[in-house]
Picture 1 (cartoon, rainbow, N blue to C red):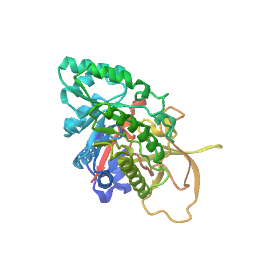
Picture 2 (cartoon, rainbow, N blue to C red):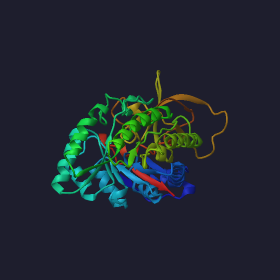
Picture 3 (cartoon, rainbow, N blue to C red):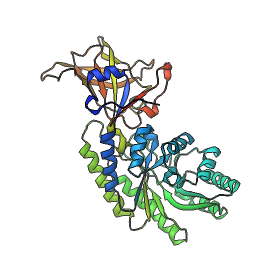
Picture 4 (cartoon, rainbow, N blue to C red):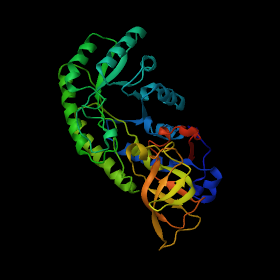
Length: 395
């Protein structure tokens, strides 16, 4: 994706500067992001280590802010691994996750001697063993367990149930240990888990922590020198509200829970935050092209859509959408319900259904789509041969 020159902070949402930049574009608030990253860091247990889930946002400026705070990075592809290195992350600050690692990706990870490879299946563990033997090098791994825990989130972003493709069933541990015993080149340094994304309560985490910790302690008792427990990410936000304080309350509660449940038993707790760090600090600015009124529906047709923000079409996800005015909006303005839709030739290209918007809106007016700093630009495409997604940063 394209990273454009930084805007001055004072001009971040003026109509004049938005028009000058040219819609649509993503705008990232690096100052807000820095505060959130530092807050997360301050609330971690003393034995906590954070690895940012790059799949949430791979903008280089964002990655640099997170790196400056001392965080590592969690990658899920060779492309993300190479980007992490290009930005300046050192191998010991990299964890490699993902269910479909290729031989090329595994060989690269081992050659670099990254901190940890999170293993998703026994066949993958066997492939890692083969690659380590071929290179005559050590590979440090953690077994990602599937605790069969239902997180209250969209089914597409649940990852901790046994019907999901992620992680090893607990019944597969014996086979995995058998592979490890035959492979001196692979070092088991910990366990890992990740039960899903956009989770807004701590109870599912507690259950997952306890089940995985039970196995962790069992392996310690059997003589395995484990040092890490990677608890993944998954903390969510309330997209219907812009209340940053509620995000911070959830972080505090989550970290207290992790500290209470795990710190006495585990040398290092690995966290993989994504959405909770970056979601609030991205906005997508778009220009209204047409105001279309029919006998059944009213539409605001804009110049962005599912090709640049896929979440509403993919998950029926909600994002607040706000008009940007040349002058402050007066009280008592007349409003009506509109569907806010994009230019893509798909009926699912809807950014917001039944949104109450001022009747005075017209072609050329600007809308801001809020909280798109996570899983926004990274999921974009050039479907319909639309233009590449622009990204602008505000310091």
